[in-house]
Length: 254
Image (tube, rainbow, N blue to C red; front, side, top):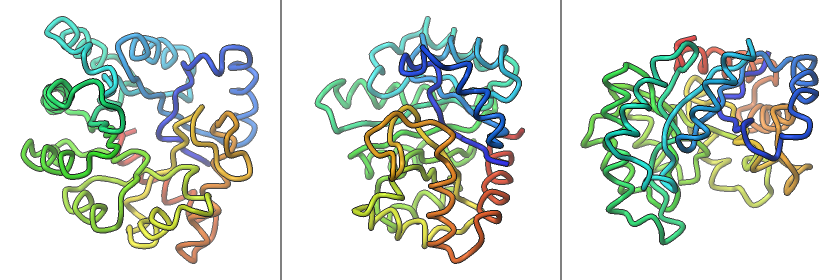
């Protein structure tokens, strides 16, 4: 009874054993996975995977690192992909200032355009925000992105910023990082965030939890994340799974 709200199973890290891994996931109680597009190629692949695998849903979008891809032709195709069966969000979209490129002046219009698309097709958004807290908050607020709702994926800021995003109506995505010993800030955010606003995610193949830190991540490791959340919140592991399943279904309208 586990819902992985953010995965990248189209990644080449899964090329050799994807099918056998999916069989293991089924046996381990991974009931739902949302595969997330990061550029046009992975968005197309996500649509194909959703058609092939009954447990899989998808999001289509252009990640800030690929925001130079955005143009009128891209936008037209994204809209077509977004209308496909089992596509439940626009994402992964946002701002990433960790790297110097693409320039902020390229990333911001790409985010604005895709928020407008999400409103047009009536889908929530999956937001990537790295080292860009204030600009992300300002843009989501100015563009009234809370109207379409969504999740701040792989949340990496403090609880003051969490409060701002929660007040806009967003969910907080929590993955393997919460199990790291040095993740004091994220543990505080989890403690602060109401349980009905937390989503489980892997961001696999990245960010595997302890004790697999540094290795390839997968949905099979989500129990470690759920156990950490249960400990922080002082509730049972089963309750974490139940509530996060309900949250994910509500946000993605499944």
